[in-house]
Amino acid sequence: MKSNIGTFDRILRITVGLFLIIATTANLIGVWGWIGIIPLATGLLSFCPMYSVLGIRSCGVQTDADEDTSGV
Image 1 (cartoon, rainbow, N blue to C red):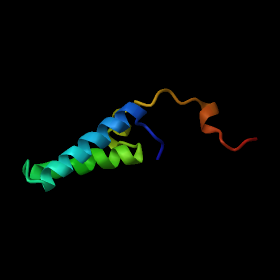
Image 2: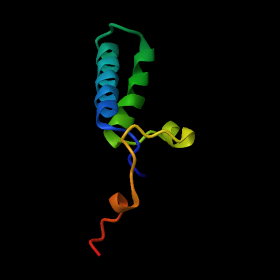
Image 3: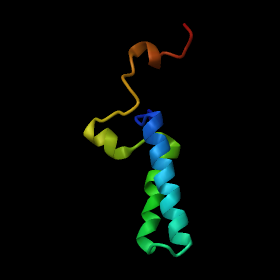
Image 4: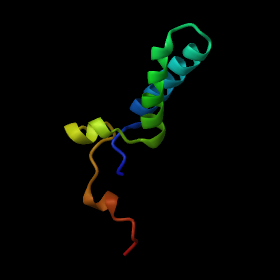
């Protein structure tokens, strides 16, 4: 899995996901708040399957030189 989520996007997803989960466990919102698991997981993994399907990247353009980490 290649990262397709940028820093700002990650912070936003993790924040929203945690807020929804905490609000659900505190009985501030209904069980629908458990949907926060999705943005939390995608933020922590820096990968969004929907972004891959739609061809979206919020982490900038990755060049071939960025992918080559072999040091050769």
